[in-house]
Image (cartoon, rainbow, N blue to C red):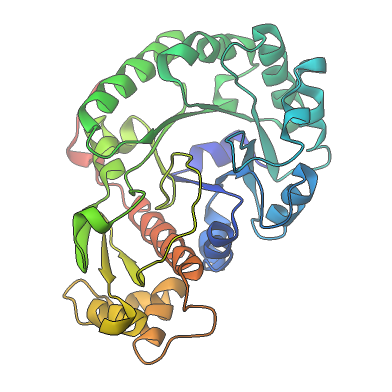
Length: 350
């Protein structure tokens, strides 16, 4: 069972969708990492599986414990997702999915223009049944009155995790910092111990604009977290090195690319088949001063890069498993970083 003490122990909140590549990356994490984490998983189509219950069952087989929400983005949502967004009975259909699920907590459905009374009753019922509740906000100031109302509705504010999700933030750190500070301050005006995670993604939809064959991408969500005051102010969260905004997929030719995840940046190599393809990508990364041989013992994804420098493993001649490898490396790195508290030099009030 997930308790308020577990919420207190969260140092890193990875957010993922129920896509094959993202779940594969998570599945290949070290068991000790999975034991430490409580990710937030959005239920959407998983390959040919498009029923919410079936996708949830698949997630449970991979992720030991999690907060769960529902993906309503076009091209990503499950076929029957709207059934679970019905406010009847305080979102009873959504909550009933989790009967008997002690390690899986439904996030409160928070819809723009939704029924506020049903939303509040839902929050109360989730806390009553599961002991804790997570509330994810993607709409900032618009959601603020509902977030504040939840603080007053629950038995204990320590049972809530507010997840402020700012989506894609590359090139927009300053306005997102200001918004995050305003929202956190407003929540803590109601209760000064309100627990907040700040989530964003700076991984772009395409890396080609940052360098044809190689490049470095700063992890700007780490900068956002530091600018608002780091761990003393909020839990660090991200989209696990995935572009966070919905877009319509298209069929196109791809250039072989491998990403390598560092603490505060992603580096990539991108070579066409005529220039060596995946093998050359892997060799170039290993020859980079950023390469850490010891990380191959901690990350399945890093080990696959080392293996590919000799020959391409089965299943790794296409992008999907390299997305899984990046997700795996990123979560392992950020989990390690989050175990070290670097906030001793900060004295920042929100």
